[in-house]
Length: 455
Image 1 (cartoon, one colour):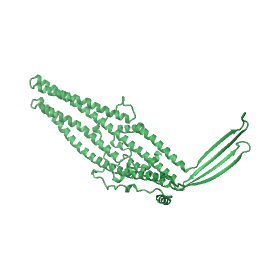
Image 2 (cartoon, rainbow, N blue to C red):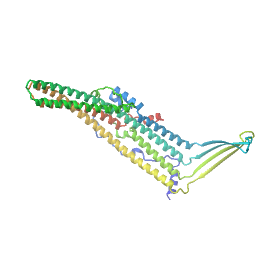
Image 3 (cartoon, rainbow, N blue to C red):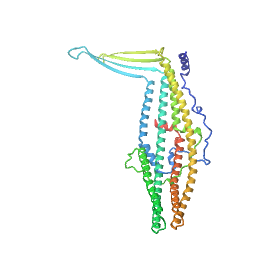
Image 4 (cartoon, one colour):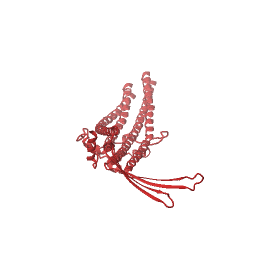
């Protein structure tokens, strides 16, 4: 009964493409995001990292796209996928073979040699579209591979940006730590003078010595973190970590760009991972079609020319044959193949829905994260200015003997923490902007043009 139903369904679908649910109907897309900024941002361009207006970042990303080894491996996978498409195309063309033979019945010499040659061709008529469905599945798989490569490129681009921003931030934090060490040394000199003059006790000297040691201890820790990000950036650029030094820059001079997130439905056409999932879904649908058509008969045509002998009075014999084959009993192999193909299609539907939901979540979190980082940095700037004024006043009051050491040390610690937090706050804003670019699909705009260029 099932075989009969399949045969009827295949006959109806012979001239049609494999039907599947439109991707826009698989997941209900919201009308807008919940955390969109009041001010309209700038539209995303293909080279999204240029929105940060940093020529050194532009150079780093360009170098990474040219030399990153993960991307090089992805290009090799693309070549493999393209070869699979060529292999699937071959099923739509005839196969031609040629051969020649020579033999001798003589035991003592080779005077009695007979020769013959044969040229043959065979072709399977694709009346029911099984080969075309298989080719469509291979092409969809290749398209999914191209889009996966685009996702990998986006990951490499964002990793380069994050590591570069982290390096600049750590350099700023190192400057703050070294400045804090200079302040600690200056305060120690003041305390030592007052101690020598008998104005303060040895407790103040010991307390400042401890503070001075803590200030020195922060520097190697930050230097180790800086080295970690430098070596990571070198590997992203396809370079050896030894001897590499990242370009200089001022993290506080980099202003995060204003970004227009567009509409949630735009993600279906902008995120390469969603487009890749869509291509995989189309490939799975084509796989179902190929499995359905495997139940139908196949017609093979063959032709041949034989010549013997190849020299002298050659006689040529031609042949033409046609054969019809239909599956009668396969022990459940064809049914199992169809069940497997349908299960794969159901899996791809679920994967596409999950990818869409995850994409919506990514954008929402990134939008909120960017807004939160902006608000936090505003307060960190206020805290930094207040801590700087407090330290100046506290140092002057301690020098004049009108304030105690505890107040001065608290003011110093507050100022260092404020300067350190300000640098990290700027990194949070830049990272949040990078995350939003990635969540929106980077600079993906005209996917058909990209695909055509990759072919």
